[in-house]
Each structure stands twice: as structure tokens, then as C-alpha cells.
Length: 329
Image (tube, rainbow, N blue to C red):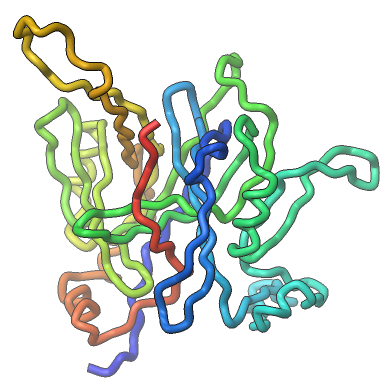
């Protein structure tokens, strides 16, 4: 079969607001050469955002030099197509044309004064490779920041990996968990191809929603958690396998202390040195956009065709090859 169509991707995004931690760790920032015929230096950062007293979300960014970088300019006419320019890597800092912005990361981690003397964030728009270096230079533990980004899904040694990749990071008003008007911000939304929903017998009112994520060049099945039986029943009733739907919810990240369960055999208490801290995370589903339901885009036959290579996947941004190594803090 000729490759004449492209499979629509299922994009996901997230936003968090909270207090930065983990910058002081040795593994916060790293550099390594890529393993390829044309090795390049790959830079990466990974740190945590405390979004509430007992919730922590890990975010990351990784990139390497490219042959070309891309600049975008809004269409001159309403509803028109944006203009894109491909620029050589070594000319990315010197390219200056009105209205063009590099397709990259928006950063506001230091303050400046505007023309009226008001303190505002000094916004930088950088390629992800340069953004990693800039964030490494200016980020510090204890900062209050707001972050938006995309969710990337992959598989590593038969394990599903979710990464929350930074597209925007900026200073915000100091986050005070004790304030009377405090509202946690740790949200996500994601298009999926629905596959199944099953009851998790380990807990009351816990259900596992399985969906397929269509990436640039593969399809990854991943799980989401539902803890509301009413929502679960609505999904079971209305979603057929391979229905495209946008779901949304909260990012959950908890530090859990795990101690070996030992019987009292007269040898004393369990050794505290054997206690481990585990990081438990889930994407908790709190609802779906019923207007997003589409039963025509995907089907089992369509998935089979793309997985065999009979058709093409759509466009997507670069994904990180980092392993899912959330710290045990």
C-alpha cells in the first residue's frame, strides 16, 4: 500500500505551579555525547516542582544541536498559514527579522524593569538546547515558578515512560501552601485512542483506563487512573475501542516510605537502613471532553496498517531518550 496518508497524533499537555526543588542534586544537569554516526553533545535537566505540601511533579528538558532551527511568524491575514523559516544552526542567534520567533522554549527566570519602571519577567525565547543551559544558570531551589509543557510517551525495556517536557517556565508570585486562597495547579489534558477500562481490585473505586498514544513514529499503550465510579461507568457506556477522545485530570506524585514487613522474631525492630523511599505517580482522570469523541479517525485495521508500515505517522516534536529515573527523595 502506498504511503499516502498520515496517522493523526494524540497530543498531550500539562501545567504546574509550585516551588522548585532538586537543583542542588548532582543529577539535576547532565551532558553526554549521543551514540550516532554524527555524535553531538546532548544537554539535559530534570528537577521537581512541589505543587502542594504532599505532591511533587518531575519535569525535564533535553536537547542537542541540530542542522537547522526553525523560526515562525504569524500569518499576515486572519486565518492564514504561519510563515516558517529554516535557519542554519550557527546562525540562530544572528537571524533577526521582524515578527519571527524561534520555535523553542519561553523562559522568564530573572526580573527587569519595563519602560514604566515596573518589575517584570525578562522573557527569553530560546532553542531547547540553549534553554537547558539558560535554565541551569538561573534556576534555584525555592523559586516559585509556573510551567507549561508537553507530555511525551515512550517505552524502555518493556516499561511505559511518561515525561513532562518544559515548553515554558517563568517566575510567578511566591507560592504559599498555607494561604487561605491557595489552589493547587498540577493539571494535564491528553488525546488518546481509547482501548479499555477495567476495575482495579486492589482498591475501592479505582479503575484503570488504557489508551493508545500515537507518536511521531510509533504507538504506545499507556494507563491512566480513575477514582470516580460514576466517571468510569460513563466511559464504559460511551467509549468504544479506538474512539478518539480528549481526557484531562490531575498529576499525582507522592513520596512513599516502604519498610520491609518483618515478624517479631525476638531480634528487635526492622533495620531503618533498609527502609526505602518510593515515588508513586499517576495521571488521575477527572473528566473528558464529550465534544471530542471521534469514532472515524482510528480503528484496529488502521492501527495495524500503520504498525506494519503501510502508512505514515504524522509530524511531531523531538522526544527525549532519557530513562524514567525519578529520584527517590
